Length: 299
Length: 237
Image (cartoon, rainbow over all chains, first blue to last red; front, side):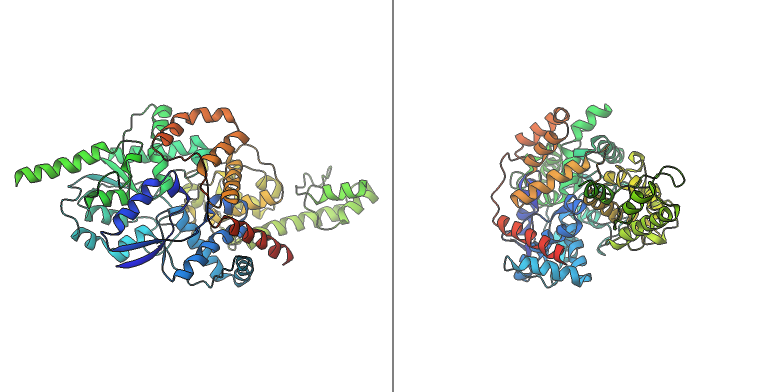
């Protein structure tokens, strides 16, 4: 069993409860131990670094310092936390003056950071450490050919972390296939959903979300899967806004990739937080269980 | 007193409009020189105007080049891949290629008072595709910081208010409290606009994805002490 220091991210307490629940639920069956970082605080995300770049690094540094004490890789399921923590880590290592200033500030809380933490995304850990083959070996019935549009979003693969291609990523596709699902071709798989600008520039973001939903539907997807909390809330909770603005009738469930893995592993919907999805994942559950029943009755 | 006021005014950030005609001293002035000259001659001598323009032009590019990610801005060949790639370009008065050209032309006021960079969705597609290793995403966020620091009032976008409510929420609670952040955002911008997302909000509430009260976070006090200390360290450096 491999242990990780787990950084849930602020959205895990509210809009992305399902991500947090499902990440914890699938960890044990996949031989991972996620130890929540004690006393973690916000990483700063894009808003903080847009108002004050250097101060934002301090927010990330506090969490990195806490993680360094544990001696484990820092894993987060949130793409925004990932890019922020990863970027701040890099910046601190490359800029000794900033490291010194941040170190002085951390000292008031008896913390120090030496730059020895490896920041990783949960999806990366699933693909690189656990591997899709290993996951496939733990699955019995799986998703039984469920057609899934793998939606990566932006910050999981860009700018460049080396674990997947920024232009044509494949990691989620391989995960979906290992679960017994069918990853449909999804040309817009790494395009933007608008992120937090859904709040301040709604019409811009709704236009982007519409394109994503359109593209998934055109390719016959029964659901979309994504690892990112912002992508999930935009595609899921704002789907009704897209429908009313563009007079469309999308009804496409959007599941966290961890929820999909949990489903394939046979974990019940409530432990995966599926009841928190706004567009009902009912059809997905039905498809998975129906095919299971057919298999059973056929045997 | 008047002298102090004029000097303060000169020290605020703005731009130069017109070289030959009426000169508005609205560029950042690091010395009282412009003001002294204005007092003496009634207007600025042309040589000083040129000097100021050179100073403004040079320093603005330098300022952007000094931020992490802005280092390679001088390498831009204006190929337009960034703008062609940008999902928000249609909403921008100055899309990425244009804004880089404006920075290099030293047009500080035009750039920093524009809402364009506030439309950046941080998708990093331009950063990945730029053939000259420029990082337009980082530049956009750096420009946002400069605009805030230099006191520009940006019209035509609500993103600064949204970012501000996010940061306030982090500073108060240690973590973002999403409901509090949204509430503050709508109260400080347009409360009526919240009506549009009533359904989304209610659904989030019903699905238990929007707690109304913030959580007490253990590291909250530590975090604010660290931030205070960092501000002190930075200002003394």
